[in-house]
Length: 182
Image 1: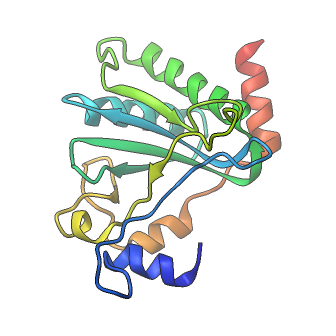
Image 2 (image 1 turned 180 degrees about the horizontal axis):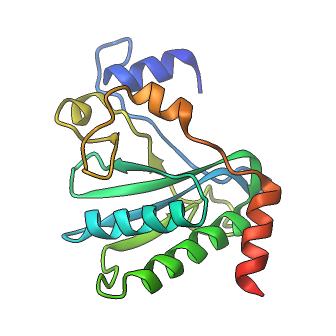
């Protein structure tokens, strides 16, 4: 990823004036990742994503909620301070999903779609699943593809918000998952 590509993503066009949106495959070749994102889509996405975010907060896991580019869904992002095994990241995500469902059984979580990365290991000859990056220009203009608060309003300064999001350590992630699985 280059500075030009980042600028194109944020501006919505490349240097030739053609539309440009960037995504990435979260899983690295060594089957680690720097984040896990939980995808919620559909009518109940907001309530379900907020309940997931609450489970994160109540268990001490820092998370960031992003409204999707369509505005009809969201991603809850958990960032790590170093690359962690994808399977471990997904187990943390699943632990939190179970916790959120236990806390809010009335929600049902019909909007839960998947985790990114979507698998523990890279498929043979593949890259895994692509996730569109936030802060896309056109959706951002209408309040989508941005990080939002618990009132579903965009954070006033997206960069300040992101800079303040704590990253989970590998040791803390391992400890939380181990405790949940015991």
